[in-house]
Length: 199
Image 1 (cartoon, rainbow, N blue to C red):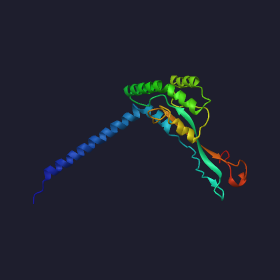
Image 2 (cartoon, rainbow, N blue to C red):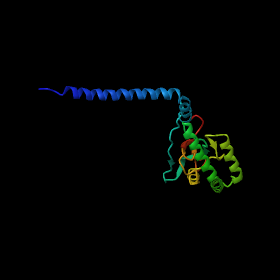
Image 3 (tube, rainbow, N blue to C red):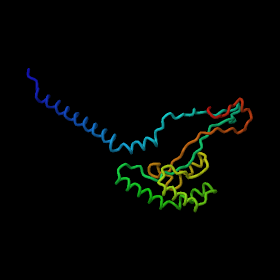
């Protein structure tokens, strides 16, 4: 009985050739990333990756026998703005940065009025200057408000034009801070427990 040796051999040779091409392409891409794109990816890693970061434990709520809250963990937020594009290709960076600047210019009045409506201590004129200063400094992490805000205020801020876009498109982002709230103050603190530095 004769077997079709040549067709099978050619088929395996073709598959092996394709695998070799893929391996070479992966190797070339890896070398390109490690050399040409090294600075870009190092900047990205500095922004998103932090080594030896202490992760605080999640603390639940403590309730009394009748269901009243004795201690609760509530998040607070600090508001920031990223004015600059993260595109690595120069042509795409110029295009994306122009889009960001155009959106900021068009939505600036709505942003200032929206922040003033949400936080009355913010002056719209001063806030506009503050925003333009952040853009002039090409900041990726520009503080928008000096105080911490509640979750409800954060969600309301997300409805402001430009802030309602994703952080990659609009630049608005937050830093979450875990806080502990005791409705009854120091009452029964020894039993309920409190947060201290290093705990």
